[in-house]
Amino acid sequence: MRLPLTLLLTIAIVSPCRADCVPEKMVKVVFREVTPGIDRGSFAAKPKTLYRLGSKYGRTEEALDSALKIHGLIVVDEPDVWMINLVTRTGQHIIDTGEPYHFHAPIVGGPDDPEAIKELEFGCEMDFMKAHGAGPARKGTLDGREVDQYVVTIDTYRIVLSVSPKSARPVGFSVYESDKPHYDMRYLEYANDLEPQGKLFQRPEGIEYEDAK
Image (cartoon, rainbow, N blue to C red):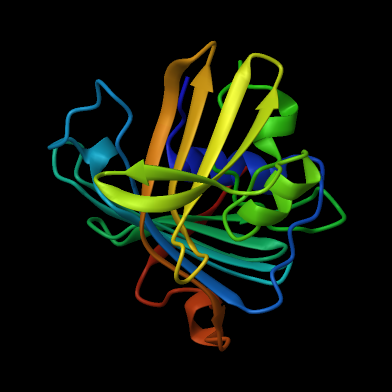
């Protein structure tokens, strides 16, 4: 089962530390899910934006969910986490008690997914693929364009990371379970060499907060 990004990040923040993903530069990723069966006009298919820096800082920005009247924003400055609804200008302040403090941004993380796949994070995709035995890139096509594809198999899952031959940056990510599509995603923007912008990870102002119990 695919979980919402905000829930994935919340679970990852408060869970015990797993394999470390610590990008040296600030990472920005804009992506959208294209798994077969998903309604292209639904909230689940709308683009989402993630920023991360080092092991401590993270930020996720979701599109407006007009049906639920939620416009989600999560800001992380470990051990502080702020979960905000920009529609109501309200939010929760969470203190991470799971030392060592380490921000995680898993790409997949359903309860039935293998733990090894849950270690795959935005910003460290290629490191994960190489660590799990991906060989040289294969030539392939994605949405009608040529790409280089790295493939690994974990249990019954096949993971395919598609990258641009010119920039070597990810453009697509797919997971197959027993050769059936399990999750499919496209990167609309990917930058892993940005200069830090500390303001992105500060406590948002103008929000009425309550402390999570």
